[in-house]
Image 1: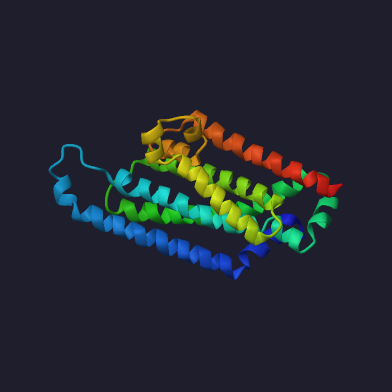
Image 2: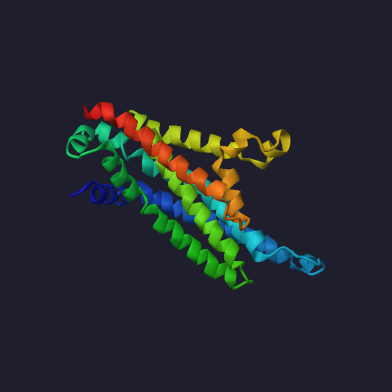
Length: 246
């Protein structure tokens, strides 16, 4: 059994993961229902406006940003087991000596983590179907939002795996991931931008770049941010694993 199969089975056999997925689904759709209810109650007021808010801007975009926040917890949980658990079970050295490079180990574990994207894709497809019943969705904005969310999740997974490599236990990796993910997200908060303006710290936040995608902008700088960030976390994780292999 290779690393990908091993990690997928271990991850999806964990009861806590299914509980986390269930809670995430419930919370996201309950809040979406609240947004739909509020949007429907304001339809009479919107009818008086020359350019009323669309379903895409009022419901789809907030839902994508909400899902992005919830994914920080889910990715922190799943990625915390990628290497920290191997160290706790004393199997990390065995994985390293049976592979040609540390990058190969990281890549296979990364692919196993990417299965989570299928769950996110399912939620997004269901949401598109539901919202399209109440109004016309902007296809371009929906597409760019999905691309941005997937790039963001991949970025989170890479960072979470790097944190797991340097952590001594899964619990430590989980807590550290949640704290660091939250810190990076808060750097891109609108209140921070209003108070300090768009500065280099603001540009380091994935929230800032994700918002470009939710506005229908397929920004090259934001794509580069997520791609380079993912590659950087890969490199740092591999750099931490090399001494353990020798």
